[in-house]
Length: 466
Image (tube, rainbow, N blue to C red; front, side, top):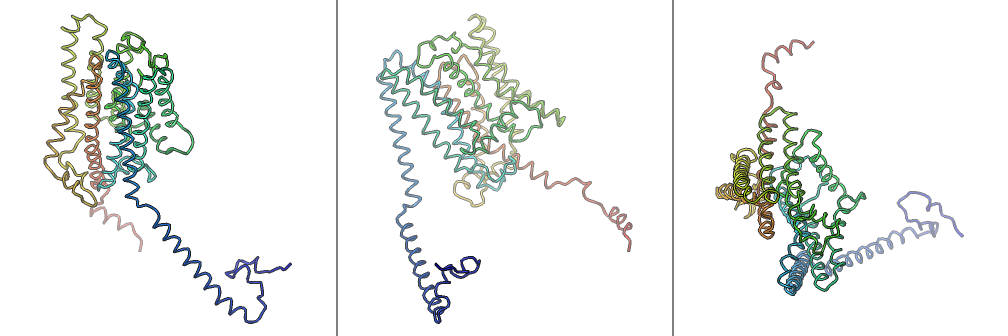
């Protein structure tokens, strides 16, 4: 046994330098051999690294492979679902599709909105506008790539569950088919409230906290609060369909004939439908009243009036199932048409004159590194006409969605809801642009009291002692 004191010293020598250290001539040989060994090891490591890098596929190849798999999977789901539906009896086909659509269309619309939000974040990241400052978020927020990753998984999971539902039901496995939407809803709820640091805990916490602030506006309203609340008004149908889906799950009506009865507790005539439709507008109305309490600005009262005009549209439509036909035709239907007209034009007027700043329109598309896409939008007059015209048309058609007596045309309502989300998608750009203009002006225009004049400077100078 030997003992070397070099093993216990924090020096730069080798730990094995004690072996033969006292032999003459060893130090020169050691200084010559070790660099050669280290050089050979470094060369071997570099060659292995280059070999491994050469064997790895390129990121472009991986991306194309993933897109190909995604498209093949999507085509397979569509083909399987279509074949299964065509095998059903024609009398029950529409009713079955209506039920399947009820359970899955809210999640499909949410998936669509997540995709669009990822596009918004991508534009914000390329733009000269600081959206991090606007939304008052930290640097660890989700990027557009992470948002698209979430939306990709949503796009995979939701149609897969829907295809499994169709397959199991068409093959007589009714109980297993009924469990598919239930499992999906429970999984989504658990992921959203999961308390551990996975699945973007900080972002989920920020989202849930904002929802709480929207539902209970007991504090001053921040920009993210009313921004998300405005988006929720465009997803009011998602709220009502979620309520009907959960109601049928709780009452064991999934994949049964009980839901055919419109007057049942979860039927299409339920009073819960208009109540769920109006909730986002009531939230936004309460926010405006809270803003008036804090700022005393009369503009917030007019904004509150805008959201209140959606209430008669929703409840007058719901009265069709609870009054006599003649009374609906000659009394409530004309009132519904008038209230729809007022709500659409008032909302359009507010979008153009208040939510957007037409003086610097399309500034948000001025990218740090200009591309053909930004050149197509930035400073182009056609964007004015397109956004204003499409906003007017979709504001009017959006009233269709708020009307419970028209919701039996589920494909039409789904299309209009998707178009409303596209309208909200383009609204986001110019609303964020307007907010950034306000922040820029407030930071440039300093109060005159903060700038001392020449007389004050002279007075102040007399107070100094020499």
